[in-house]
Image (cartoon, rainbow, N blue to C red; front, side, top):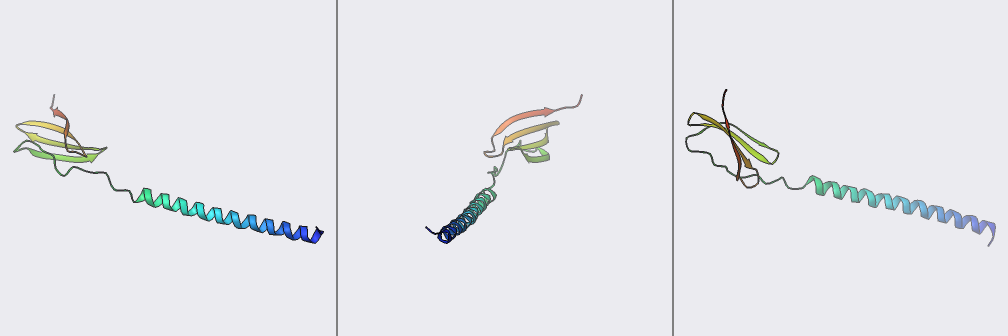
Length: 100
């Protein structure tokens, strides 16, 4: 092989390597964009439609936090805090709040 042919072959190889590198970077960018879209568009967590408190109770506050629904209410002279599972609405814990 002549020196000119070797130089031409080397130049073609470098050009091919640069083209393949750009192509791989493009595929990686598409992959990152797809993963981002899937993570961003994930559905929000399920929240219970209703929770039950005693009849005649006065709701003081209700919070939806950390996978729970926390309802503070006053019923029969006592102040109560009920903690419900946010997904199912099932009562997890009931705490009576009182003054000392």
